[in-house]
Image 1 (cartoon, helix red, strand yellow):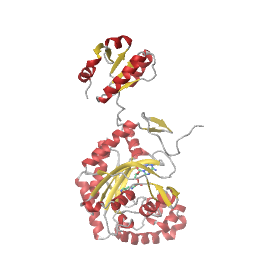
Image 2 (cartoon, protein in one colour):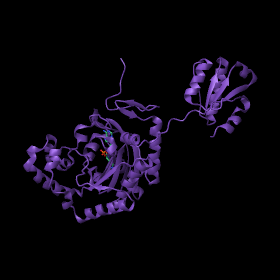
Image 3 (tube, protein in one colour):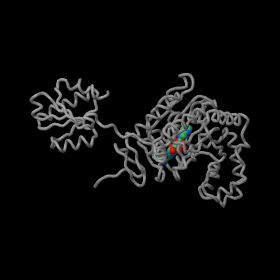
Length: 431
Ligand code: HAM
């Protein structure tokens, strides 16, 4: 019997591979993309936070919201003793938990945090949708300013632009304050109630629990029923309108294009005011590259005892890779060793084993074959590894304390005294 990975999960291997119609990028490609993300977000003033993969179930239920699909249907949850755990489905609630737990508000100013890491949702797997996926994102905690909203969106857009992804649509909306939304929720409920028999089962359920979610229905008949529905805009107070206007003005001042979408509601309950999503038409059904918004009430929901305004976004790494593929972005391959060492005979093998170690300690990327194979087999390995140089040590060379150095590009060979090998290599190999 052999084992297979769990449905909706995938391995990241040293080389890219294709399975089920999806190309999975190599670990080198992941490192590269992650380093671009870290570099851009650091430049925007965000600092990394790492939180555990397991969190208390109650944190996610309270934070993300009890009526959301994530909490109702998609949690990987388990118990040990009296403790209920969940594999985190997202990082906003965990980051706010850490912010409150470590009193980061007392550090002064606004906390600008970023993260990259795995998340878990028991969704039906399909292209661009996994059960273990990876998010990167930011959370700016402790500011009301619309400038923070625009900065979050600008940081997010800069990552995609830096990676050559331009075929995107940024949709933004405002969800108002909780009280404004409550009034709107009632108006929407009254509007849809007379036609509720024509709604899908899911939407009928949402009519009771969270009618705003019906707005982003993908079912055409339901979209028709929504024509003429009241819009949240009519329920917004002056401050919410001013905030939204300022976010839009700032985005425009940065040259960031967006589409206003009054139907954009997002699938998590904590949002207030600004909400946004970045889509790529290249991605198929799972077109959301990233999403986010303001969540001025979340900290209080998690027990802060005071209002802590905040804004953030999160993006899927797997969907970013799909977009990179569509944009024909060249992902780097793993670096080849500068040197491959070949040993012929047991004594030479011991000597080379030590030599390889010394060169590695000196900072050179060196490899060798294990197992005392033939010269031909070791040479084949050197070619496969793509080494720029090969060092060859046999009994004769060992006796004379020399080693053969072969330039794999030109085919030229020379004998080098082992004692001066380090110095000689330094002239050839850039450190
Ligand atoms: P979200 O929209 O649920 O927001 O997820 C953000 C992104 O994660 C999505 O746009 C998508 O790219 C990716 N994603 C979500 N589920 C999956 C999945 N099953 N497979 C692959 N990718 C997936 C949040 O999680 C919020 N915490 C964003 C946020 C941060 N809001 C404020 N701060």
